[in-house]
Image (cartoon, rainbow, N blue to C red; front, top):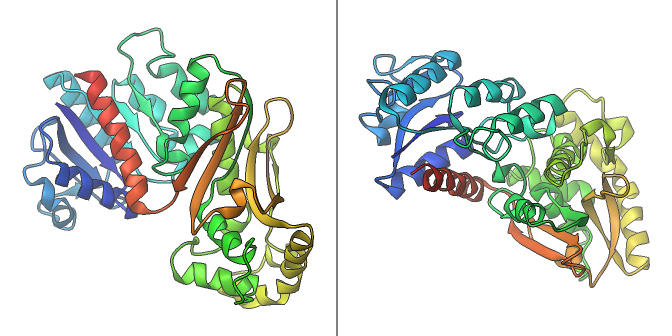
Length: 367
């Protein structure tokens, strides 16, 4: 039996709970859920919730839940590990750096970790090093806690698993290149296509559509500034063995300079059409060279890791991507013709799938 505790049942966390409870496995038990306000735990530390399918109702009921206290939540989980000798995995579904900074404490108490939170693996190097030092495979303790974070890059796509396998088998990474943002994938697939659609939509119109569909962050500048892609590039670089930090990357912010400091997202959206000519010109220059625009992250062990808007020939795999798909190309000594991973790289369902898959990996290894 593997106990599972969820931190942050938001869009992805809620979908994960749906998938976990539908699975109805005898090897997994949901023992706790905590959000920013309330938390529910089993009646006894380490025991499953009495009605796991009613967790949302319980969180909203002050008689069935407690005021949120993450340290207490973790204390109770750790007590359960000691009392019942039942392995427990904490699943952090937040995007919080403050929570990610607690990972070493959790691991030191014998709790396994699965997370889509990029902050713990892309922020300060010391945090990444501490997480790795305390996790199985890097710790001298053979029964050290397991850490899986596949969904930090590419949602449910097997990106990190592929990279870990390449590294563990001694292959030499020559280059990793990819479209890592579902949002930016959609924007440029729609805006700069090798096949003319005849619609002639402007860049601002496509951003507006993407925002209305929920593809962008509430403020699209949080996608267009490239920092989400940069974090994924840092994670890939570190897994590949490079001591890289965000400050080391060349990151192209495609938000027009004049719009970076406007007060609100609404103001940004109102003013963005004034810069459509800039993007149209970039697109026309690409088309004149028989290329398309794609926003791409690059890990180059021999050079500089970067995130930038680039041009790719119309017959390049990146040029024919559809919708909000991600695509990652691994060029190595053994794969001089790149090994490509492609598919849906965004969305609650596929992200929860990636997390669920990691939870099952933990369950298989602790039985």
